[in-house]
Image: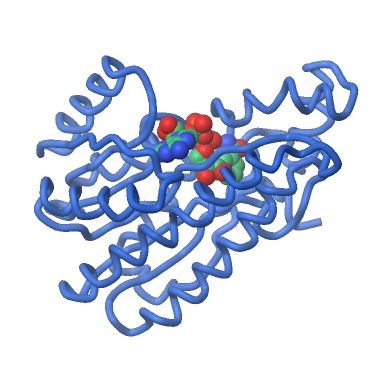
Length: 260
Ligand code: NAD
């Protein structure tokens, strides 16, 4: 149902972003990938997306912690793929450390990528979507858009802020054919979660097994990780015409994390 729709997914070289890209390609969308990674792996993924959708997929490199790269990326995507219908602002990083010693440059980096990048992407994409009268903007927020965890000050602040941005953008675009929503997963087993285990072990003085069992899985009443494919299925639904009245919403997929 997404045949000929162009989708730009940031952070689509890994984890949840790659799952979004695969799910949208399976519906026939033209994919524009971006993110860091090994060039040979990225090329393999790009080809797989082309094969899945039956239309050429593109890869455009960009460091989205830099303001100008966001604008340039949207323009390049639009030029190469012939338009922009779906924007998924998903790229994000984490750093786990107490506020007392949290490095200021980590704070700046997380705010730049997790919060400012979605703003710059939206600012460039919304006028293009207005012109065509249809658009879907989705951000990957997190349960940390609603609740906090210790040692994640920058991430929690960025994700709370991201929800404010989504709500504001939804109001500004309401009735134009554009919807703007957040998807908020609980813990999904991706490199982002795997990489924070050593710092969490240090911050909480725990073993790897304790962090997985007593911090990650204990937070989700289901006792299970969310899968990237489950998150991607929600994004695909938000792109359907049936979802046109869903805007400014925060779709939780968290195994009950925020229910208690
Ligand atoms: P991941 O580490 O697998 O992927 C992150 C992606 O962002 C990669 O493609 C990476 O190359 C890209 N990226 C990193 N720095 C970048 C930069 N400066 N410029 C451009 N791209 C950059 O992580 P993931 O778990 O798939 O996370 C994706 C999103 O989901 C993030 O916003 C994260 O906060 C959010 N999220 C993840 C979880 C989880 O449990 N994994 C839960 C809730 C929300």
